[in-house]
Length: 627
Image (cartoon, rainbow, N blue to C red; front, side, top):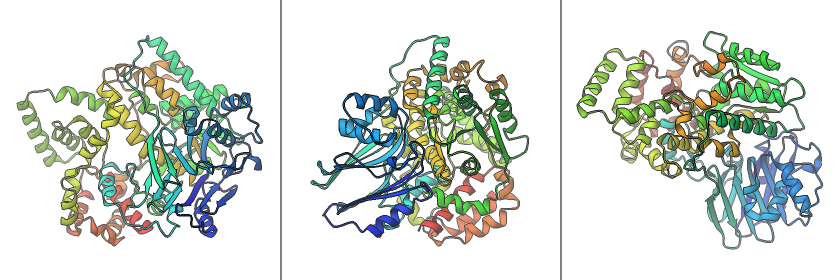
């Protein structure tokens, strides 16, 4: 819901209203149903509205306190707003709207920055407190809603998207090469980077306070997950608790004054959310599925679940035109981003918007319950690393020889696995889910770029970055889940969904990422999540009898485009033309001769280089649009 923007001149200069208008209207796609502007000489707040709860003008933003000393611009939903409203009414507060926005405003009036402890939802907001002469900003615990900002000591700018900030002349477009170095491996830009040197994004579960008197900006982390405090319960007791908490979260997130539906992929997580939605709804819910129309998609699985729950099901088959879609995707995602699942996410959001304004999804199940193959690979590697050195030498020789001879994906992955086995586990954990490993991208770099980053491998940076999150857990699998939640999920999966959905003015909600559910699952012993090498074991146990056995027992699949065959077939000429011409900015990073050599090999190899190529395509298009 919505888009926010703001300008603050710390030295007292007046805000240009025309400039604030341009920044606000750059977010019109996020909030096409209303706009509002607040000006107080050197402070300006803007808001674009997508109406979800209380459709009246009483809920319009920016919203003022009764004495007009506190002003709020807010993007998101507070799911426990009714409960908090009752508490505030008991304390004497009077409300003029039925909105969650007003509840957030009055929570700040009552509790100040500690209002964050009362919020259960997804949010990014800025609150101007005239009396205290401060701007209070925060982002939700998992990073579902974006908050990007610029601060140079004299001017503070913030917005939901870079497109808004880049309207301001002080936001130059100097490229952040460190961000691009990490992007080539991770396929996304990790916080606090954005791709631009001067612009940052607030990390998940972080808040900021700008003191207008002292001209200081203070940032802090206000929440974390504790995996150390485990609880000892039976399988049956954990199953009961999981079902109850998912049911509670789904019910809370179905509240809206506009049509609500759900994405139904046919996987366990979305099927669970849809099943609990159908149970709570008084009428058939709308479900939306997307597929390729072949044996490798999940449309049949989604149809099976739809029939079981009696939903109004809307499946669609798509054959994406990547050449036509790429510019639209990069415009929507605005930071360098290259997760191929952005394509179906964008398309299914566009499709669902035809019927509903809000969609629930199944994001978070894998992070809550250890559902990724890389979790099992990591567990195996922790045992394999203890094997005798001679065995590793022999295995490394075998995988390297066979991989160079046959060049298949499986042998390459075996070689990469053995190559990384002596690295600290957090570094190799990233290698199990990346595009260009450090040793591959270095070959493509210019001598200057290589000299700047040769001693700064992304895998090592990732390991260092994850230290804080590993400190919240004792078990290695729990540590990996914590890193996945606050790095990969917060900086990759959440932006993937928010940018795709809000490009079409669709709000997406993730019941499996409710922070109370996360706090509960953090107390589940890791061996109940990854049971032996069985992924999501305790979640599957909890959903026995709730979901069809075919869904519970199926292999993790997802929507996968046949990128390798497309890139090596009909799109090969397009790829050569785009990557060898396109934006000249890329030649500040890549040596032309090395990139040409890479493309000649990748476009003919039996090994799948589609993720590498897609990453390069997205980067080139980003250079064209944003630099």
